[in-house]
Image 1 (cartoon, helix red, strand yellow):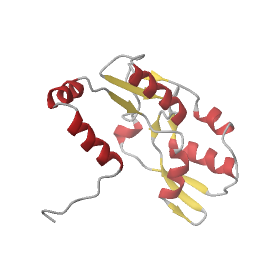
Image 2 (cartoon, rainbow, N blue to C red; image 1 turned 180 degrees about the vertical axis):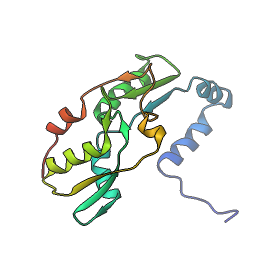
Image 3 (cartoon, helix red, strand yellow; image 1 turned 90 degrees about the horizontal axis):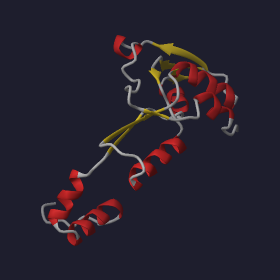
Image 4 (cartoon, rainbow, N blue to C red; image 1 turned 135 degrees about the vertical axis):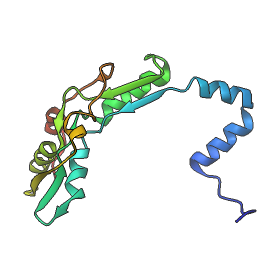
Length: 155
């Protein structure tokens, strides 16, 4: 494959075009201005977690302590960062309050009419002590999980 020509589509094509049209010095300048937006888990993790350990009518969900947020809320923050309305080389984003993933998955299953029994699986001490929670400077943005779930469609 040494001399193979790979297809240039999507993100790869955009990167190649950018590299060919923007001088290297400008690309390096852009890289120095890069911003990082770090997100907590999204509310939808409650649905995903049900499938991770499902065996028939039971599922084991790690009893993670997390502070999830809605995807739409994250999009707002990303737009603020991209347009310069929000400053900082690192922006951390999370939901308004901590939640237990197993409890979230139970609520999600009930909301969807799924009678699966959710069993809270064990987690390590660091997780139980909040290592997955945001730092003190995080942007906390709603809605909270219960509000998001109440406004989510049912099958």
